[in-house]
Image 1 (tube, one colour):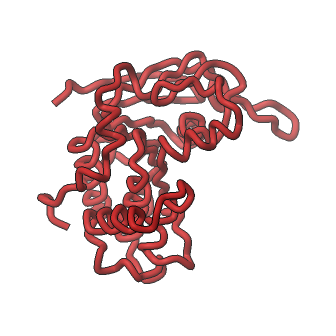
Image 2 (cartoon, one colour):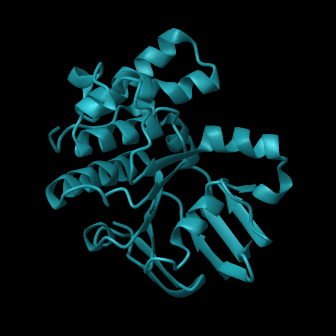
Length: 252
């Protein structure tokens, strides 16, 4: 895949529409998340408050056990806080029922994981197409969107390959294509370069950064990878579940 290749305009229509929206993509107000251990209560997120601007390359950083993944799960509607308020893409999550949250997440939020989370029995094409099956799209639209994404990440020729026939970098490209195929406004990535060598990781970062910059998608990462952090436009450092530092780069 060359640096000149672009994600097709049709892929990011939802994100482009959201570019006219005002306000941050994520709002956190006094968010607390605790878990009950065997003999004590563990506080994973301890009263965090901050906003994440739209259309930025944002990083949640910190050492292992700091609460990065927990916070990403809360933002992604995978988990719910014990206290505080979370808004995502302008929606107050507390106002939604469980079914409504599931529908909201499926239409507005996408995920990229360090372990790729591809279905091993499905081809690259089928893995990318899968979210569109859940949304009930017609076969023709599913085919057009899926092929557009596979071509954009340089894997059209590998569309029939299963994950065990792909390299780590190719698997992550499939995962990125799958995340983008439903045209989300927000992509959450949990340590997306952790299982890649530095050269492949750099290529994946370049791909995701180009998607964010060219097509107004908001990216939020959980990471401690210095290579990835060096590309951050917004950085939120957390330790022991608390925000300890925030840094913002000027818009380019």
